[in-house]
Length: 316
Image (cartoon, rainbow, N blue to C red; front, side, top):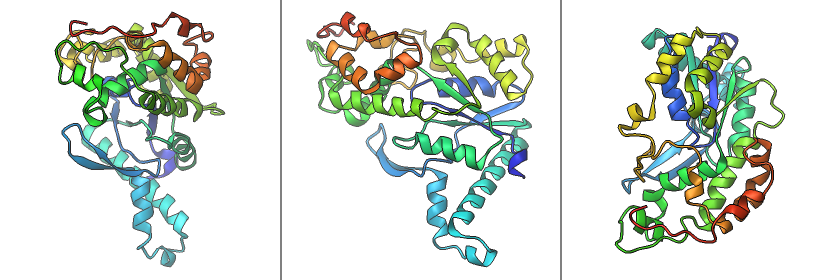
């Protein structure tokens, strides 16, 4: 399949920005199959799982580069880099053809949440390898991303911390005065920031936000369907939205929190319940310009409205 005929497009966002929710909604469209390929980023690390085990996180381009070290590509008239690029294009073509054949759908969407330090490379690779692809930038308030991400990693990296004792072990009589620590603010704020700055200079993108999806998912889906060139009737968009409410995906009402669930709470602005002034000051130093750039704040005055400490008890 020619790369110019490859009906493959990309949703790119920071983790914890609603990409799984959006992909699930897209899958309810009769012409779209959305999934996660992990094609790009040249990433390979072993990470902990929630159950305490470990497993590799590896992108296909990282595998392709290792594979090429032992392949006789020279007898094909190819260089090392040339072979790796052809291998990536051909494999993507296989994935698209496989998905189209199995689902009967014509458009394939790759959900990409770049691994740390890889966002700019991911965008560059999409532009180079799949120049006809539509890139959809999904954004969410970085403070909600940081809050959601910290909860998501409660079982991975917070054992022994007060937040782990509070939310996982539910230690009686413990009052939580700070939810974050500096290291998790830095981790999630910088990861979110790089997912925003990776798009600087990009013109051929469509942008939508988690907040707009929460406000009117059907409208945002219809707008996205038009960008992708598929049927974009209000009826189809509404049907897709109704199939992907928080209640249907999580099995409980929005606002009914489960601290360690992937779909934890399903609300906008939950960060206000967990940020102290010190957290706000640190986040602003690291990524405050992006908050303003995306319109989440006009200046840094939001920090002044934060408490100096939390007073979370087990009934909160």
